[in-house]
Image (cartoon, rainbow, N blue to C red; front, side, top):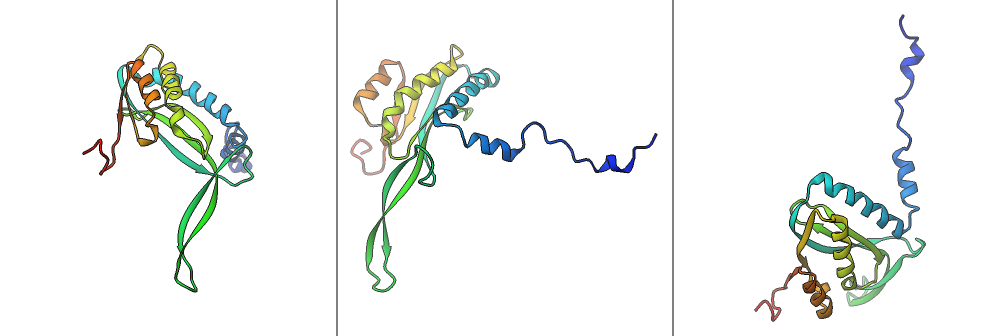
Length: 183
């Protein structure tokens, strides 16, 4: 039997969640809930991707600006130089930037993130080196071992680097042109 014409007008079902519903609900998660979800997913992905052996990882952070009304966010005071329209003088203007900083430890070959944390935007990144290395190794389990970590100058803390060495991990710090260590 042919289908009645109104059957052809039924929209396809989207599924249990629309993209907007998902975005609205993820936006309600706390940073701690986001981290737990992320690490649970990574533990599952490590087995699927098949990471094994000795790994090199890189740690870096990115600022995620928000409005000041975002609950729990931090802020940075950022100084900008601007030119006054009337006089042409260069003046410094201080602006508050509200938000978060996301720190991610990534395996360099697969580019799979192995660990992450979300902190207030003004927080010092260096204190998260060891916790992220330990979390990444926990996410890897016995499948693979972190043997080298590449970081920028934001992680120059002798005590932390000594502890990284004690974990059997070689650290590489990217040097800037003109730095004594590079010369």
